[in-house]
Each structure stands twice: as C-alpha cells, then as structure tokens.
Amino acid sequence: MRIVFNVLIIIFTTFLVLSCNQDDPRLGGYSKIDGIVNNGDTYNNKIDSVYGIIYYDQIDIKLEKIAKSVFQNGRFYLNLPPLPEDRLFFTIDNRFPKSLISDTTVKINFLTLQCISMGYRIGEMYLHNSVNRYDSGFMECEYIYCNNPVRVKGIIQKKSNPYIVTSIYDLKFKKGWNVLTRSTSDQNFESKIYYTSNVLPSEVKWYPNIMLVHELIRQK
Image (cartoon, rainbow, N blue to C red):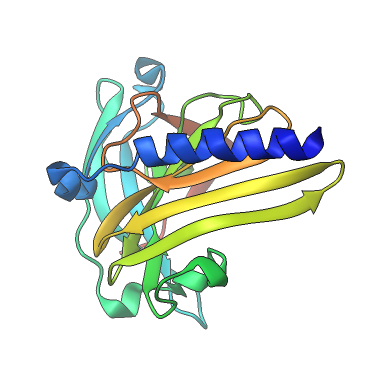
C-alpha cells in the first residue's frame, strides 16, 4: 500500500511540476519585484524601506546592498541588477543533488530581503502562500541568480522516519535572476516539489518576519 501511495504521489506531483513550468516571454520580469505584502497596511508605521541583500566571499562572509525600495501602502518595488562573477558565492551543487545537475560549474547566489526602520534591521521578508509552513500545500519562493543556464531534473527519495520523503526536481534556470518554487503536496511532508516558474504563483505574498531585537545596519 505504501509503494502504491508513493507512486500516486509521484504521478500527481510530476503533472503539477510540468504544468507550472511552461516557457513565458515575460521571463525578464524576474529582475523586477512588485512586493505585495500580506496585510501590508499594518506594517506602514513599522517598516521604512526594504533592502535587497546578497552575501558573498568564501572566506570572510560579507554582505552587499544591491537594491533599495521605500515601503509604502503595504508594498515595495525592487529592481535587481545583474551580479558579477565575484559576487557569486556558491556553485549550484552546493544547493541541489549533484547527480541531477546538467552543469555543476554554474555559480549562483541568493537574494535576501531585509526590513529597515530608522536605520535598524528589524526583520526579513519571505515569499510564502501561508503563515503556517506546516500546512498541507505550503508553498515558498526564492530568488536565485545564475551565471549560466542550467537544468536540475529528477527524483530523490530519502527515508525520514516514519516517512519516505519524495523530492521531485524540475528546475530550468536561465542566466540571470530566476524564481525557485518549493511546495509540499502532503501534510506529512512525504512529497516535496521543486520547480521554476516563469511567473510567481498567484497564491504567494511577502510575509515580514519582525525580530524582537533590532540590529543597527552598518553597510555602504
């Protein structure tokens, strides 16, 4: 019965991945973020601006602000620039199963969004479809920059007592900024889906995670 269930999960999630990964001429829009925040108006007096941050340097980890936006009327706008080679911190096999990657020499980096108030970092923004990450059908997105096109495709199964977790990858990264979407199709996390989509799923919004202790920003 368990084998049959896992096979059904694979069939269902494979269909979902393929249906969400169609080519779209608006791909260049990845570099422009129209940040609609969940219950955004409640943060108008708490957040002044939003910084787009990358971390880099393999030895002495550094951060750099690559974009900035005023936070107003519950939303923000960011234009993400291309990243030079010396700002690409990882190779793609640091993040995804090496056996599924078409070119393991591709270099990548990730975008982090910081919430700023009066010069202090008060939290970060995350792109979700729900406040509770343990809900069945939870979905999250992440911006990733690649220096070359690369494909990550295949299925990995790992035992995580008492479940067998099936991770399905159907990633088609282009050179430049991409959006990675992860979703969970089962409440017990027996199946996870990883796919790239040319348009952000309509269900996701930005959720601020405000810290109790504020941190002074010291950066150029």
